[in-house]
Length: 238
Image (cartoon, rainbow, N blue to C red; front, side):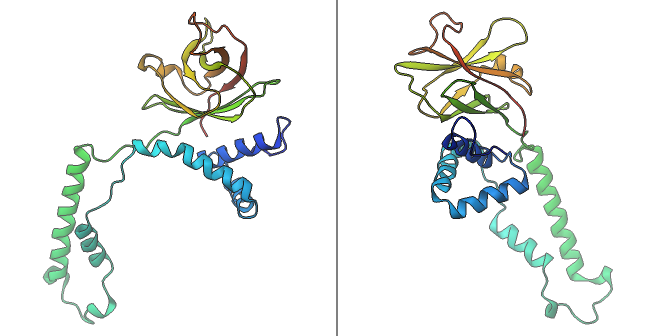
């Protein structure tokens, strides 16, 4: 867990800690520590709330799937039969009306689930997002990146910003060999979301190195990094 008394400043440490909490990368013990602090530290709780609001846009990619109300009621009524409704001496199993009705209902339910699954209405479990904290030893800027490999969306959230003037920040993928490849340009004073080109998505993987450079407003005019690399980080899964 990131402590709040880092050399780059207490506020920056709180920002990173809040981001780690909202992204769900903390251990259970650390989450409890953060939640206890939120109850007694209003300023820190406000930082967490802002992080939740900034990252809530990720929820737009997923739809809530709920069972039909009538289906849910039928399942509930059959699974949770009231004790007084059960006769003391029920008839034999093969002569039980309840048994045959339940069997018919369950058969229909299984068939319905099979049809829905075959049509692709249920999504397969999502792989955990790759995250990377990008920071420079003598830099006033620190960023947190979160990458969804399925959609190719890479979200950048600044957690500590210095004065950059009329400049843009450019994100780069640094391969094992060859020059860095640009992933996009974003403003240094606000959260941003980039869509990684499909041809490069497989390269943004666990262990990939990301870097940020300060470029002229609008990005590098040459396609290569022309400014100072102010932050680097390695992508990893929580």
